[in-house]
Image (cartoon, rainbow, N blue to C red):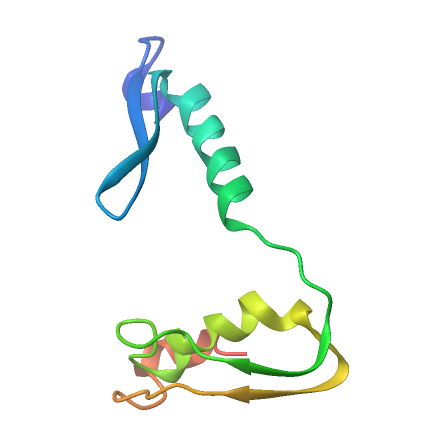
Length: 108
């Protein structure tokens, strides 16, 4: 991006919204307001829980469980909420199966 903008200043209006309402907004130098927005989003959307023995995980339906490759992100996001050796019941529809062939190289 620096090649494109060179030394010119870049400004941005960044908003965080929920349910069609703006919860937070800031205007200013793009890098500064974007950094602030990420901090606010993390603060409002990150929750710490005590790990449990058993956990039910669901990505929440389409489009988050369109295939197993996409749906497994829910496991990645919740893996620290289950104790070592604990059990996870993973519920995902996956109407498109495992996923596109090229994604298989990245599947773990």
